[in-house]
Image 1 (tube, one colour):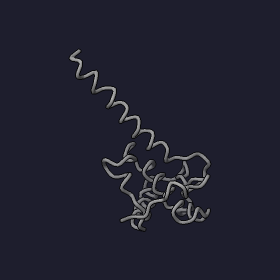
Image 2: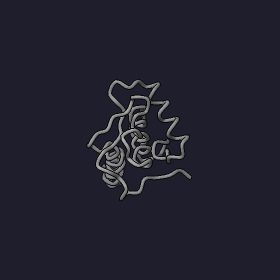
Image 3: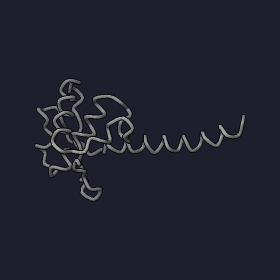
Length: 116
């Protein structure tokens, strides 16, 4: 079972990919982080952070998870010069998307059952 950052342990800085980081480097970051014991289930199909299904979004999630779990040291966000620290939480995007999908399903199902 992979390690997960505790909700109370998240800091005020997050690790994300640099804009100029290429897809191949970001995929290498995903592979490294997921093989290091970090829980990557959220970016797997059906996980709350699978969508958007692109390497940059997935890398953002796993790079930040690695940074948070490993003590939030600046060097835990280096990733061969492809990571950068930010004060904007990137992981809220996948949580919000997941919550929005649930809301849409709740709204759509009753309308579909009205027979309009």
